[in-house]
Amino acid sequence: MPLHSKDAIVDDPVSDVYASTDLSLVMPKYRMPEQEHDPRHAYSVVHDELMLDGNSRQNLATFCQTWLDPEIHRLMDECVDKNMVDKDEYPQTAEIEARCVHMLADLWNSPAAANTLGCSTTGSSEAAMLGGLAMKWRWRKRMHEAGKPADKPNMICGPVQICWHKFARYFDVELREIPLEGDRLIMNAEEVIKRCDENTIGVVPTLGVTFTCQYEPVKAVNDALEQLQRETGLDIPIHVDGASGAFLAPFCAPELEWDFRLPRVKSINTSGHKFGLAPLGVGWVVWRDAEELPEELIFDVNYLGGNMPTFALNFSRPGGQIVAQYYNFLRLGKEGYRKIHTACYDTARFLADEIGKMGPFKVLFDGDMKAGIPALSWTIKEGFDTHGYSLFDLADRLRSRGWQVPAYSMPANRQDLVIQRILVRHGVSRDLGALLIEDMKRCLEHFGKHPITSPLTSEEATGFHH
Image (cartoon, rainbow, N blue to C red; front, side):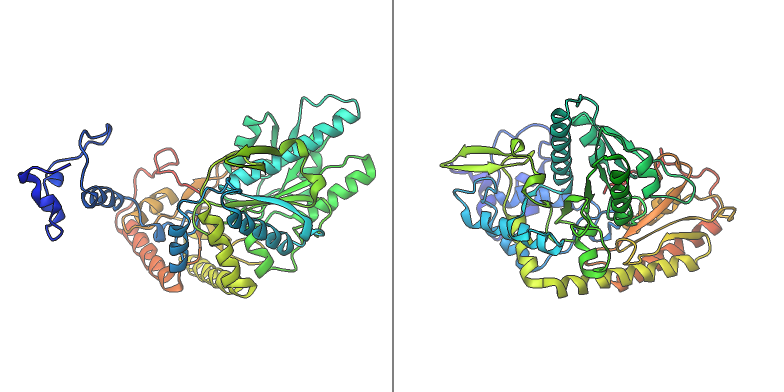
């Protein structure tokens, strides 16, 4: 469509974008504009609005990857039109997905890695729900075969991320979440066994708890469940929520038994876009063997020219993240992942040491690679004179320099305990960490000179996302 002469500047490639007719007015925000716009101008509007977001590299709340190889950006561009679900049209992308599943099964010591079942998902939340569904279906089949009712399933877990609360509500499962007690901020085997009965579909330990970043004791839970079966006959499986730890422990704590080496572990989910170092969003779920994934949950779909088996909550989704995950596996190998994650742990330990020296803070988790993920968490020492500030005030003050360092209350029964957490991802360098420490010291100096008379509470503070 030809432009009027007064708009001729829009077509001039050397003209200034911000002097254009398009950008002399505010574009509509809640209705579609009547006319089309020059792509440079539309891009500038969107690009400039995105500057108002926080800097993702300074977001020390998120588990998700914020730094990517240039080659990954190129692969994502090349895969922007590939639909992961259409395996008939994109068979090589489907083959790459299958290779990733086999690599993960081998990494997690599957006894049948060559014939394992698994799939990619949009993230670890979807992968977790698929693992939960498989547990529920297997339990229901056992109950029907025994002639017993199967209308009151329950699942046992420690302090879990919101996806498991969603699973319990959406799929009608009672969530027996072990409440925290005193200094015990994760599940333990004793508390698990107290809650087991014939309606328990499974136990879900988390390899890297969202709140404190610690690994839950998968082997101790496995051994306790083995003993329970010998004593009572109850056969209760484990699904490991390895959202972060499943891409950490194999490289940095290979002696830790949490995976398919334990007979009770029937399935594992993980997030590729966290410590798998892939771009948002990709997750993975792998089952111990074919018997652990009920056939009734797999759909054979005649779609776009081919019959394809599928087991997912989503349908159409991009293939680029899976391709990027495979690139990481090839480029990094075990050595590369070990180097990158070890560097993250080293930075976490550095930050924990420096924060512990500041005076007001008690470090709860210090980034020990044998006990959790590369992160740290702390609280204010009991009785310490903080000049009135809370950790929510500290988080709010750090935001003035762009840092997102979340503060939050713990789950039941320790809502009285407020902690703060830093997640050290690939791209959070020692130098960046040192700059954060200096800014934290400046915040404490500010509070010393300007005491807080009305500290922020969790209700008033900005929430955090994980």
